[in-house]
Amino acid sequence: MGWITAVAVYVVVWWIVIFAVLPWGVKPIESNDRGFEPGAPENPRLLRKIVITTIVTTVIWVAFVLVATSDLITFREP
Image (cartoon, rainbow, N blue to C red; front, side, top):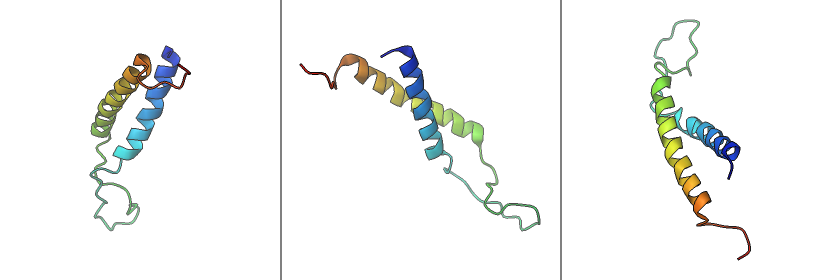
């Protein structure tokens, strides 16, 4: 596995994990004022979610790289 493949896998996994993490802890705005979107989160905590996403993605990516480089799972003929 080359470094370009490793980076591509990391980016794809990061985006999958961020979409899984984004809904965590979302509470809608309680304001009924005009101009507020009722579905918008009150405090999205994006930085915290980005950090969580990066940590989870790194763990998944390291596991993927270890499995891919150790030939634990192979699709080649013996």
